[in-house]
Image: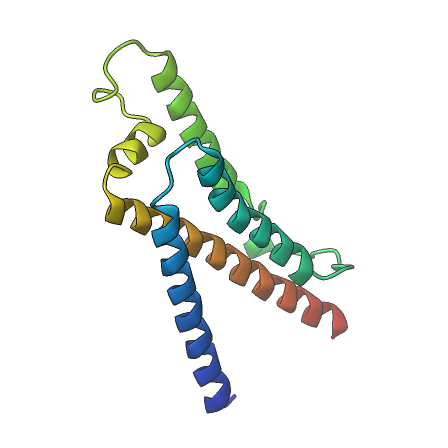
Length: 151
């Protein structure tokens, strides 16, 4: 199936604009002090935008998903395992006595990075990029689901 060069060009421009906007927003976010109202607002805005985009792009009535035997399993199992592993690691290191350097938590590692403006901005940009990837992938899943149900 041939691709439309105009659509590919628009997609590249869209990615460039998104990257520039994300970089600018990350540079602004890096100026905030953690656990202040400003930092909370700058962090909450992308989360609200991501949630709104996910709701807006998801089909209203997705069909029941019939998985082939090769695709059996829960689609979010890997994410659930990752979240549980990180939560258990954080809890373990919170309870264990000793220096944070011996048993670093995710929050103590990000605190060490956040002391440097550029690293803090890059970490925030990576977080925004992860959110954009989740929205983009969920939109593709929704489009495939809608196309499958229409066929």
